[in-house]
Image 1 (spheres, rainbow over the protein chains, first blue to last red):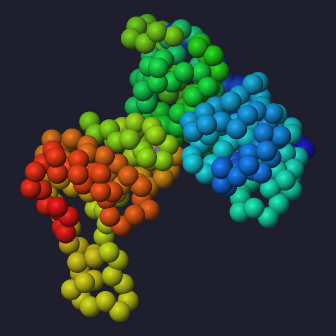
Image 2 (image 1 turned 90 degrees about the horizontal axis):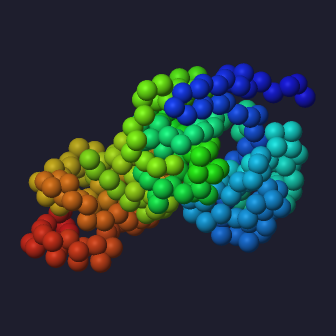
Image 3 (image 1 turned 180 degrees about the vertical axis):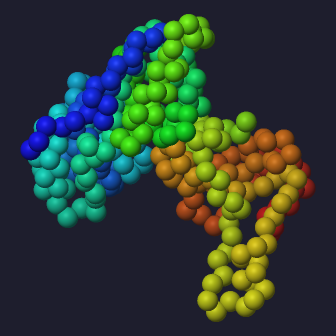
Length: 190
Length: 109
Ligand SMILES: [Zn+2]
């Protein structure tokens, strides 16, 4: 396998928060009946994370599970493990009606780090960025300006944002502009 | 600003996270229907000032279609409900009757 290239080569921006392109991240899209205990066991085995409740993000390092919709999960694994995990999941799911697709190379990932992260993201998304609405461990699919994105908080000072790879440049420019020096809002607390 | 609660993922979704899907509970008249039915299916829409039923899709969120009942005059949202139904749930109709006595919408009241 050739080396994976990040869409922006690991771009970074330092402003009122730090924007950093991260990855490569193994990401497997799984659609199926999330209430099926056999499916839950298979994804828990693959990710090492517990099955999340609706809107949950159970992530530790490069592994985890993101609840995307009532019939969709994203399974996070180290990039190098993605292809193998897809095969294992396929076997574990047997003849269940399910879809397993490696989308690792179809996504771009960014961290937004710093005390102003809620204000920075609130400039770009209609999602409720208050602490009580988006605590660490909660996934929010929304839009950032004109493109679809998913975001969750790894910890109170670090947000993880992902979007389609084709809009990686737009997303980086967007986040950087929203984080430009002197643009503090002082509305949300970290 | 219109904010609807997606009944599938539970998110309070702002209008710009949603795609409008037009009027709710249309009956599809296709091959075998007469011209009047087909015209009604294609073109005839309610345009009320007041209680209205619509389809929306949580396009930038979980991706699911759902239904919403709201007031076009005040933007008050009466409720949202599953897409897998041809009729609003009775408790929602009761809520609307409480808030807008005497309302009518197509064959609902
Ligand atoms: Zn939703």
